[in-house]
Length: 444
Image 1 (cartoon, rainbow, N blue to C red):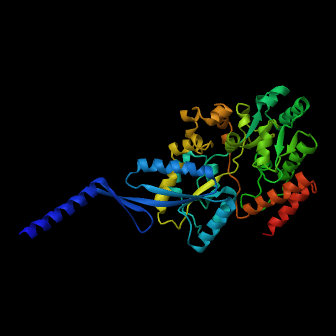
Image 2 (spheres, helix red, strand yellow):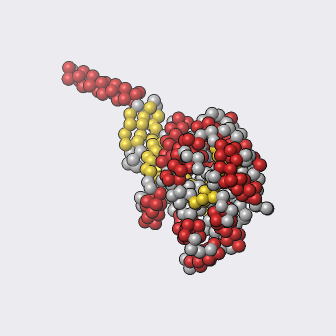
């Protein structure tokens, strides 16, 4: 009898411990690397998702996105594991993984100039995103989405519009008696540049010789591109040649510009030089705001953002640069990954956070009027609170880029050969350099 009672007590204690365990929650790993938790009467599975990026800033954005998702979706939490790689290493690693059929992450950032490499063939290794893009198309700057589309299917979501703008140093312009609000055309800009040089001895701007952020917007704002809409090379068309000659004239004829120290606007030498107030302006996409706040702190309160000058009949801006975040077809959790990505970047809340966390111009137009866009933060403190009123006046001119299979090669030829030979070495004319590059591109 005693033996029977002891056994019952042991069973009761075991049951009690088990129930206590259920009441306080428990966690175990599952076979996919996620974990399963029990709470109350239900079972909750935490799904592990891998995210690759080449930009440290994007890690902070997605850390926040995961925390926000888990607060809203307690029934399907995620554990986001983020790896940050050097840009070329990450894209090479991704390409090998997708081609070999194994090793790709669930979610990945792909730089826009490299995105065509991942859309080749009849069946890209990326998941289609139409089910989350279509419902909010009327709120998106679709020119940016088209950069990551093929045959009507969307495969990537950008962080920003990337609207091309002018960053003016109002302190330098003020010493020369130049009002940036009076600069409407490129003729106005060149005239103002000559005044600035005469009054202050400082160049109006800087031009890149090893990257294309000075050259590319000049030709796209005049309706041209490196490729035609059907993807054929046109590096040496009339507009492109004139655009490069235009930059060459700023340097050598009008003498209002100098080459960017370090060769491009992302060189540490350039940031250090610019931070000392050595140039009156620079044109870059709006996402360059983060470079000012991070690398040129001494220019705080001195920089204002204004629309680009225009050519006769030309556009007021262009969408430059970008990163398309995609879900790979290898993901074991495609649907969840797509839902998570959509909430992170396509929701109104997520779109606003691309501004509050990253300082980007959101791709949802309804975000621009939100009070959060004028709230005090490091960007309004640096540039003033009229940033988005400037954006609203130019964004209608932001269209898609003519991406095609040859785009990455075309971009590389312009960056590494054309601009350097014409602007730095002065060994070839714009017409010669662009003709050679186009002939090489045609052979690809």
